[in-house]
Image (cartoon, rainbow, N blue to C red; front, side, top):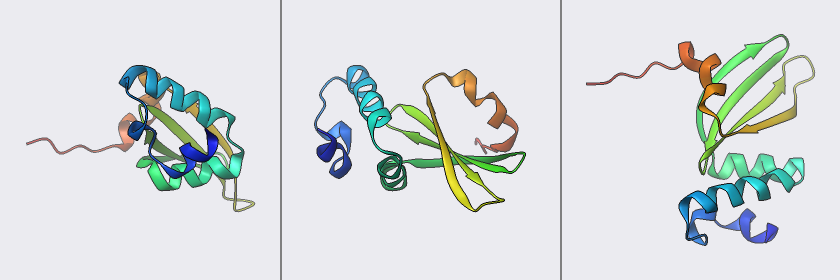
Length: 102
């Protein structure tokens, strides 16, 4: 199943939207770090970035969940990743996103 998730969008082979999203999140969490990075780059939708201490934290949306990618500006390495489904965790990004609604 890991090879399949790396090559195809999960929505292509999971029928139930809610169950499918949770399945994808659980599979994603088990991937090695480098494979997670590739998957986020290929299928994630970039939403925003924020800074905390030495880190630039990039926020992505990915098949019903969110991923924060933590990149150290001191070492120039991406060395952390956090996944979540709660929209409460998006509060720190509220002031960074400017939506023009007409």
